[in-house]
Length: 188
Ligand SMILES: [Cu+2]
Image (cartoon, rainbow, N blue to C red; front, side, top):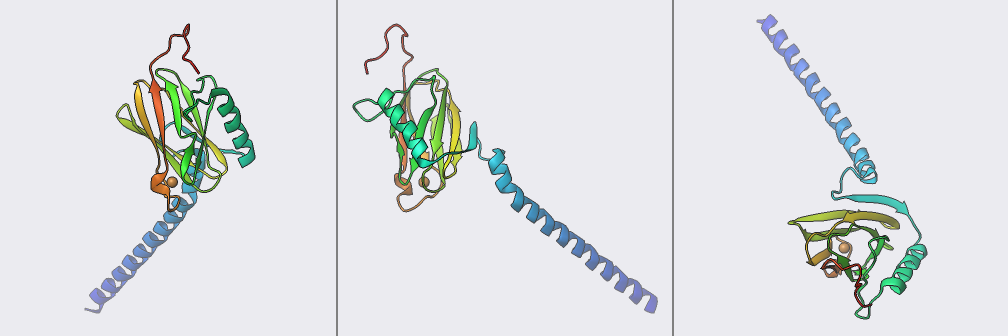
């Protein structure tokens, strides 16, 4: 009788010990994940799309790039028609994208460089070939995203990271224009 009692007690002890080991393991694992998530973000393991995050830049330096781009490719309607040979600079800020309308050429490869001068934003290109492209836009860092639009039409650009009261207003448009005849470039 006392023997059975003893073995039951030691079994309970063992079970408790086992539970403790599990608990410690779980806590350690939770900590590891907690620490690794920001590291993954920086290494671009999570976040999706073909995006590259991380190049630090001052707001002034990025504005300078925007101005140069506007002078070279700005159109009267406020949109830009950039060359695929240069990086396309886009400011993601509270609460909009600058420039708000970007004209790209069908079939050309573009590198879009997003930059946030204020808080964390996320840029999502909706409806490209039935999918979406996402990038996390960290403040004061330039994040690039590659895109080769195959179909003409409009691609919506929205913010996917709550960034304040006007978050839902944060929208832009990419207009994919027909492939151009290199001998007859469009009027600027
Ligand atoms: Cu936002």
